[in-house]
Amino acid sequence: MSYSHEVEVFVRLCETDALGHVNNTSHFRYFEEARGKFFKIIYPDRSSSFNFIIASIKCDYIHQAFAGEILIVNTNINRIGDKSFTITQILKNKETGITIAMGELVLVCYDNVKGISIPIPEPLKENLEMQLSYH
Amino acid sequence: MSYSHEVEVFVRLCETDALGHVNNTSHFRYFEEARGKFFKIIYPDRSSSFNFIIASIKCDYIHQAFAGEILIVNTNINRIGDKSFTITQILKNKETGITIAMGELVLVCYDNVKGISIPIPEPLKENLEMQLSYH
Amino acid sequence: MSYSHEVEVFVRLCETDALGHVNNTSHFRYFEEARGKFFKIIYPDRSSSFNFIIASIKCDYIHQAFAGEILIVNTNINRIGDKSFTITQILKNKETGITIAMGELVLVCYDNVKGISIPIPEPLKENLEMQLSYH
Amino acid sequence: MSYSHEVEVFVRLCETDALGHVNNTSHFRYFEEARGKFFKIIYPDRSSSFNFIIASIKCDYIHQAFAGEILIVNTNINRIGDKSFTITQILKNKETGITIAMGELVLVCYDNVKGISIPIPEPLKENLEMQLSYH
Image (cartoon, rainbow over all chains, first blue to last red; front, side, top):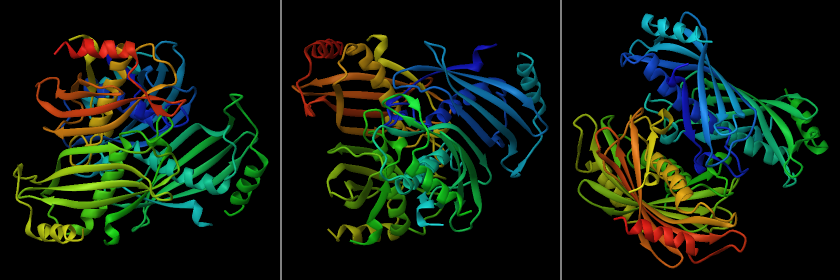
């Protein structure tokens, strides 16, 4: 799989909490960084009126992560619908390979100007399908 | 249902993003504040070795929220297991009553010192059951 | 001083860090909430093209704060210039009255559409001066 | 100057706000990541009872930054005292070289166990002085 799918993040102290580990809200920040980079490659020429809207997020917390660690986020496509698609995002410890968390997100294509959900644009769909076939 | 279940939060600018609305990661911050206040009432006398560990979070995003709005988080118990229980957290716009998001979290009781999951402590279980019966 | 200057915030777990206390970045989140509420009262009828831009922030950290605590933010005007003004924001523990942090911010009035700094609008200036005289 | 002083960060959407740019609180998150990496190199063998406490932060906001941009944080020592030292952290846009923000932080050496500020440990002091001489 190409580089774009794998993103490295450094755990900042401000992303941990008083329980000593990465706070449950921070995983979603790492997922967001990974999506930002992923979509820059998957759909570079999007119009300014186009956005991805998150319909739902599910995250299973498997192991703890700690300040100063380097984590890896892997992003994969696992379903392509008409107006929406589903991605999985897996967070791992870079050094040990241990899985920290597994996320699943449903993303909807959205036209900001019209304020409505829209079919997945064709060039995006082609790239998503290409990614899907990598599995 | 008692006051403790309903928490009011103010949407800070730093909790919105460049799309103009509350960022997907901020909902979990509101949920966390609500849980913090909820458990202060439901389980005030917990020992320092006791923690709730989040096994999973699911969040459906229904409507957008914006900076400066007042939101309400309602927290309810909807399943009580042996070592874990499930809560729902609903985020609404205080003024309009519109539902912003619906969260579902599985929480596991955990002994920090022993480093293992433990059965729900009896006094907590009683309070959870009392809350469950409110529905 | 009027109610609007005093804002109460609850310390969320996600605003603490692995050192066990409120992370240095969170104080600025509390300050922002207080400003949001402060300016709603001080300058309620601002046009959509008007914004406050932060030119600088200084924060002295005096005492630690912890998850679950209730903090108070007091916001005061302490200098009014031509295009900018300076506010102080003091963060205290509600229960003990201990000062957690003291912030000083220089805010510049800004026209989004023209993309330039502008003189403090007259109605805002009057209200700022009224606040200044409270000291 | 060595690699350790220069850190690259990606601006996440959740670090921007509804004004369209990086929120004022996020700069401190970038600074913290840079310090985390900086001190891993400058003082790798610190004992678990040792911490840096932030006495004060000052940040001048020069230019805006936006989601998806790559920023650079440069960290430098600019004063070494007995128990404290001062660092500057400069945030730049990687592509354009434009300065986004300039931070100045006073850090105090602290013994967690004893709960008191302590003189800068000798090995740390030597490394700080070496960095200072790079200017």
